[in-house]
Amino acid sequence: MDSNQNNLFITGTAYHFIAAYHIAKERYSSSSYLNFIYFSKSEQTDYEIPDVIPNSNCKIIRFERESWDELVKMLELQSFKRFFFFHENNIFNKYLAYQLKQKGTIICLGPDGSKPYGIFKKNHEIISMFKDTWVDYKLLKSKGLYFPRLIWSKYYRYGSCKLLDEVWLQYPELFDAVKNKTFCEIEQMPSFKIQFLNDLINYFSFNDQLLFENQKIILYFNQPLNSKSLIDKEVHILSLISEKFPGRKIIVKLHPATQPSVKSNLKKLPFLYIIDDLMPAEFYLAKVYNSIILTGWSAAILHDFECTQNRFYYLFPFFKKVKDKVLSQISIIGFPHVKIIDSLDQLV
Image (cartoon, rainbow, N blue to C red):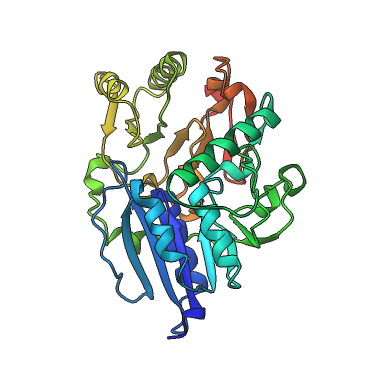
């Protein structure tokens, strides 16, 4: 097969992997393409996945997160039609993008959760940009890699890297290209279908029995919180929800990066049913019907499966009242199917 029809994907999270496989399956599934999907392995993504998923032209390669630099050294010697990466400011991704672009590869930024739609009002953004760029280039040099040009590390903009040819988004109509200084082509992600996720689930060791129930429940996706004030606020919100819906099961799907102490405390709350595993939140979302789906601001609920009759809510305003230093610099927007609420009376 002509290597010029090979596509390369480098993914760091389960969300990235699902998006990469979806793009490959929906846009590049013909026999003229071969899709190489590299999926980093860590404690949070230690899945057993087949190297080749039947009836697809995708080859899945796991790699250790600590060996990202060795991976790009190997891949820069090859040729690809398109290179998709999802962590825009990963310096190794940018290095590889630069090297492949010299060979004519189309450089694509895949969707990184809800980050494209956040509004960042970073204090001293210019100073942070200089500092982040210095740290990134120092890391690159320590691994024996050399970047022949300056590419700023703009952690508070999305799709602004000058190496990009395409930015792929689930909701391009909600993306502020001007504010983010994004000047490349915007590509619409293929719409997610529940059958796609159900097919993919078959190749993971997924046990939906952990859901306890899958209809008329309250499913909450937590996120890794670091400050005590936010952690306490989460418990307080869940307690209020329990009081408002005394007859509903409240199931909490823990993020794999949740601190052990936070997990322990949540498991002690008698009104919660806890799911503590590594499986992607999206898999559980695909199995729940006619329920209330909640999260602070997680990307887990970006997918809208209309046939499930679920109601989706962001609780971000509750957390922002804590006046956390990081959250105070961030604003988020809702999505067509996700409502941002500041009162539990808005839950139906």
